[in-house]
Length: 538
Ligand SMILES: Nc1ncnc2c1ncn2[C@@H]1O[C@H](COP(=O)(O)OP(=O)(O)O)[C@@H](O)[C@H]1O
Ligand SMILES: [Mg+2]
Image 1 (cartoon, protein in one colour):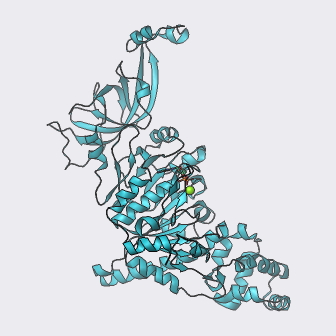
Image 2 (cartoon, rainbow, N blue to C red):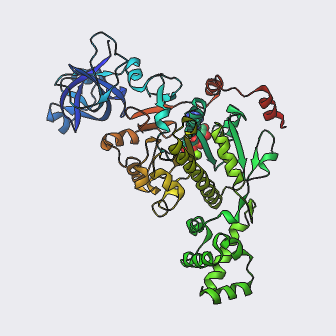
Image 3 (cartoon, rainbow, N blue to C red):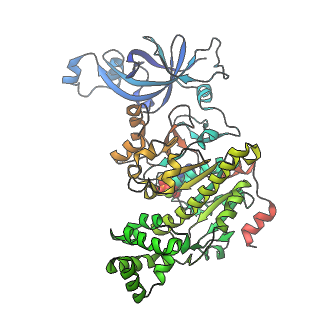
């Protein structure tokens, strides 16, 4: 196979990577940090990343006193003799070098264990090389984008993706939500897992206008009712045309646990005394503590304080603060979990659930509702797994569930991640067949312990040093990836690393557009009846 040659290896170390002197006719400007390149050793092919570039000269006089007004002709004449460029290359995978001209696709690339000798060739990757490493699109390989310099698909292994919790990071506007939509489409279409999506900013269930002013489709439009159910907190959402809400969800005060309230200390303005005061209430009223507290008259409060030793001012403050919760329009005094059980039954049948917040999209709403629902869902999954372990009957094997949350640092910051159900799910890996997609613009806000559990990380541009550090927590070869991360465009480019890809790679994100809708439609076209319902309401 004839790959285009870029240069030769002149120096290197296993840990530090290889130094390659570029051929004179190759300009540094043709290459990018993070490019996928091949080093052709004698025995092996090394699939590598460009980690750094340097300009050099053999003549110190040129550095001390650079010639002025140099003609392009002379500059070219100097290139390769007096001036030259080197690139720093990090081999990440290797494959025995094929005897014929084609890579044997039955062989899987292996982790690198050695380095090539001097003067091995550095070459541009061909389409075949990309395919050999990143696979081809098929039922379980989803094309998430293309390399920056080529128009061929880079695929994620969806089965591996859903095996672990994952992170999608990037500053605001880099394309996280669009990318998550792509991922979800891939997962839904392949059926490798079912999804519970907390649609906190009203962008997954229904169409939305993009920053370019285009209307983009929501998941309900792409997949229809047989695959997606929408539960909304907002009873008005259902009334808007073109939006099919399956259920309006109510949350009961009785379903709120002390932990949920304490998590919201900031949003609710709670005092430091809130925790012990709630403890006293729980001692007297058990599960009904919140309902009882909210119903207390001033006399009741006094009486309770006298009986329990609670501090009157703390009690009054707590009651006042917690009334904020009771006033949320989707709150009812009493609710059972039948609706969550219904959701899990739908998940069992292979349907996906979107929880739509509608107008109720404050952090208070997100955290309260996502915690209560997820806790229950996770509990039901635990029961399923226990049953499956007992019977070992394949029919009882739970379907893998992926839960998507935006603004993940609210649930997973170091102060709370040990207590929230989301922290628990991230930590227990996939023991109960439940994993997360955490989406966040500020990964440094997330507990490092949770970050280090993430299987696959997909990261757009980040501007803050500490966010970049956070994303690279627990990643090997982080110094090589930092450059790739820093060189990303501010939109629609991501670095993908981890479990679902054989090696880290920078891609241009696939467009979420008509062409994509068509590609998704091939498998799962909503029935004509559903499309009519979508258009005209029922
Ligand atoms: N894959 C994509 N296809 C089409 N447009 C995209 C894509 N990714 C990002 N965009 C554009 O970038 C804008 C910001 O993307 P968005 O996902 O909302 O960013 P974030 O969630 O990171 O704030 C979108 O409104 C859209 O115009
Ligand atoms: Mg977003």
